[in-house]
Length: 299
Image (tube, rainbow, N blue to C red; front, side, top):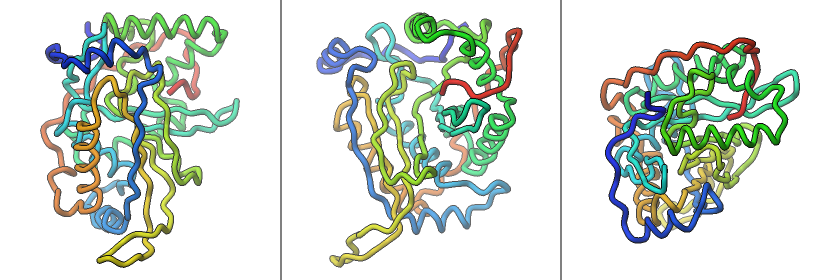
């Protein structure tokens, strides 16, 4: 059984071959950018959006970036065996800070096939996933916790290397031994604004194999130019970390411009926030290994 559903193998340009040959995972192909975005229209759109579960700015951003990856899918690939393979689905991982018996721990949840869900459905699914994490009922997190709880760091490093090879080179599922499939999906969103941080450039993580990470800062007053005049507006900084092995500046530029247009004027793009197609059926939950205990696991 496949670990990640993939489409056909992609042809590589000359630079793409050079980039893949030059860098490993990921040492260090990071390319950084950020946008300072007024939030007035986004907040008004979210306030008026009809949904049982009120969507947040993070859900709003998840829908926009998923749409951008659908429109410009060069970043929606998996790099395996020095070749790029197009992902057949656009999944979004949202990081979450949990309070555990051992202190604060970084975890998160993945939303499968985000373009296949409306903004309201994304909010509802996120609320359910977050509730399961906080109650220690998330099967994937409990599975990871059970595996890593008593493992020394040197053995964990070896285990992660084996998992990375099995998942991302062989594309073999390890769910039977309690390791979740495709834990991080196409893009990671980290809302560090909840911690009072204005802006940060999030590094690529070697074990995620995720070529795009978004950071969402704290909403705050910032100077903006309107009709040639400087004014003050509530803004948020959204940072972008790209993996240069997957795409070039032209791909990132196209995606950033589309992201900015939709964020600033969401009312002009109503289709982005609805279900673009029937959502893909989620994979069956793996059986929990013996000895699983609640708690937050590695993101």
